[in-house]
Length: 310
Image (cartoon, rainbow, N blue to C red):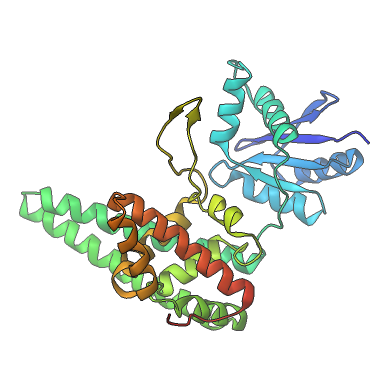
């Protein structure tokens, strides 16, 4: 049976669609009527995969509309699609061409179709993301305050910092109400936070940003977080391994947990010390601790088992 793959290039006002292997292309408006038309046409095609690039939020409503219609939607990494286009020698760039490249990429790589987060999980992810943005704004204002010499401007910046800190406190209370008011999330947060080095912020980031936790094996979950090392090797030459890609917010949260864990988690501290004693650079050892922490959290959620001191 012929495998039909659809690529969609999402812009603010329009959706460009490419179908493989037929080569069919069309476009619709990114409005309710256009989405309804898209659903009808894609249902007639019965595709195996419908791939969209992550485009800073424009793709969310499109993915939700297609998923609710029972279509196999997957969000793909733009950097990987660009690298694929470069490997194909595709230099021209228009929205229809981009849609065709996305379809070709999905056809070649066959990314796994996973359920999209439900409305409640998406709301939690939005709250967690907003909290992160406010913290970044506070940090930026403090940097400006330290460089400012004019007293009146320093006072203005100080008022802005107080306002942002007030918003942060309000958001933390809302997050607490949402998580603690949902029994399944409350239990999951308590389970994750039982690990020394994992606090409410990290636990809530994992719940919101990595709903696959406990459903994938350790290699898959590490790759999803961008903590799986990539080896560079050709013949006898071996380059340094590196990490990258994946979900940046999850990886950042796990690094925070690793910094705390190497001080207060006996198991991970011993692991960290062994790596340092073996001559591993500190940053490499911390990456390994973050990866091991993720593996532990994944197993705990899978087995519904709280942390036990070893």
